[in-house]
Length: 314
Image (spheres, rainbow, N blue to C red):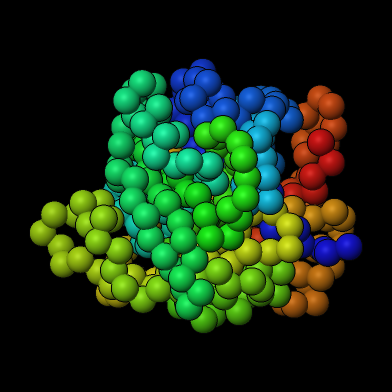
């Protein structure tokens, strides 16, 4: 059994949980409720730089989840201090910090048209087709915004899985994308955690993203790679040239903000981290979420992203 089981969930900060549930459950089909917790969130003193973090956390899965869309979403509404921190200023795609959550979809354009034309979601990028990597893997992509302008990518990896006679649907989280300082350092780090299957690598600027960057700044170079693990969702590290500012923001900020890597035994995983010299931000934490315990601990990756390991027993 693998110690590290790919990305279990994408963490998304929200300003209002009812509004978030209407978007993620009502419009995007994440209707499988794993837990709904309100209370203290321990183990965040180092990364949140404060004590007494309190939040409502709702873990949701999609009923159509597949191998290309296996990940869940973790909605987080900060209830301490002034509430949900703001979306990081200046973030486009590739600045250090979580850039997006990507959902695998079947028939992307039909899904996009339903969400934008009928459900009132904001379009960030019209659907388009492309072929990526040395294998020229076919895909269709589009982008919409969550209620707080966080980026949600819709992707159909047609070249990886083409023989599915099914109606248009969203299937779950395919990957999370985050900006990094050094691509090799980051990819070498995450290979230790099981992200060893490279789906594509691109060093060309992706033109449709141009409107996302600040007016008056020269458009950056893009270096993008996508890595999958044997289980769970994948990661998409991004390196901008020139490197722009740190856009990690505060833990719990609205929009995509953290992710969790699944493990079967969190104590064993921490022991492996210690052998690899990976620093933890706290001891293992455990929340009583009603039907089970939610065990997690945040660790330090090369860019000190908000990333944790989670024991998924719910």
